Image (cartoon, rainbow, N blue to C red; front, top):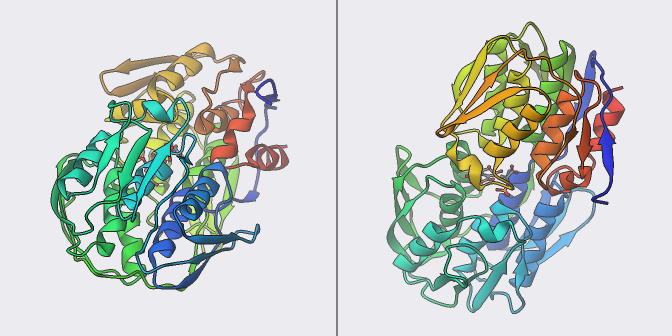
Length: 425
Ligand SMILES: O=C(O)C1=C[C@@H](OP(=O)(O)O)[C@@H](O)[C@H](O)C1
Ligand SMILES: C=C(OP(=O)(O)O)C(=O)O
C-alpha cells in the first residue's frame, strides 16, 4: 500500500456539503472516561480509525470490556475506577493521544502495564508525565530511559496528592492526569510549571469531567484540583464530528474561492481547531453557520500573523492556505510541532518548498511567502495523515500534485480520499 499514490485533480468546489467522521479527541476521551465510570455506557458517533481503535483495544487489554458495534456505537463496561492492568504489551502505534492519556490511566492499574509504539512514537516525549506520576508514588519509567516509550506504569499507590508538571511539549500529559485523578483516593492537585500548549484540548477534557459528573476546580491555565474518590457517571454519550478533519474541506473553499459546508459542526463546540475559521475570516473568507453546520466561502486571500500554540494540528492546513495568500504569513509559537507524527515544521516547509513555495523556519515560527508560482510535485507525507490531507488541498489549485502513501490517513480519517474525491469533482 505504501507504493500507492493519490493524484489530486484541480477543482473548485461549489456549494458542497460534507459529513466528517467523529472527533478523534472526543472519542479517545469518552472511551477512557466510560471505562472508569460506574457501569455500562454507550458512546455513539465514535471515530473508527487506527488510533481510536487502538485506544479501545488498549482498554480491553487493561481489563475493560469494550464492544464495537462497527457503526460508531461502542459499549463500555466501566468498573468504577478499578483497572486490572495489561498482561501483554499494549501497542499504540503512533497515537500520541492514546499513549499519553493511557499512560496516566495505567497508573490506576492493579498491576503494571507496558505501553509501546512504533519507531516514531519511541521518539515522542513522555518523560514529564512519568516524573509527575512518580511524584505521587505511581511507578512509571521509560524502559530505554529516554523519557519515551516503551513505558512501564502502575501497580503502585492509588493515593494521589500534589504534583507539578511541565506541559510545554504536550497538553496530553495534563489531560491524562485530569482523567485519572477522580479515581485516586485523594485526587490530584496539579501545578503546571511550563506551558501548557494546546490549551483547548485541556478544556475539552474538563468538559468531559463535568458532563460525566466529576467535580474539579482550576485557577487560570496552571492550577487544577480534582478531589479523589469520585466516579464518572455511566450513560449515553455522543461524539461530535471532528473539527480538525473538517479543516481540509474549509481550506478547499479558501484556496479555490469556492464554497463548502461541513454538516453537524457548531461554532459553540469546545474543539479548539474551529479557531481556524476566525483566521480564515481575517484572510478574506466568509464563514457562516446555522443549525445544520458551518460553511466557508473563499475570497481574495491576504496574509496573517498568528499565534498557533493552541491549534497545532491546524498549522499544516493554515500553511497551505497561506501559500496562496498575498503577502508573508507568520505562524508563531509552534515548537511543539516538532514532536508530532513527524517533525511537522520541517515537513511542511520542505514540501511547500518542493512545490516552488518560499517557507522558512525561524526559531519556533513558520514564515510563508504567499503568492509564489507553485507547481505540481510528488508530496512526501512522512507517514503523517495531516501532511497527506493538507497537501491534497493544495492540489485543488495546482495541477500535478501527487500524494505519496495516502493510506496514512487511516490514523484519523480512513475514508478521507473517498470523501475528498467524491466532493472535489
Ligand atoms: O489531547 C488531544 O486530543 C490532542 C492534543 C494535541 O496534542 P498536544 O497537546 O501534544 O499538542 C493535538 O495535537 C492532538 O492531535 C490531539
Ligand atoms: C498530533 C496528532 O495526534 P497524536 O498526538 O494523537 O498522535 C494529530 O492528530 O495531529
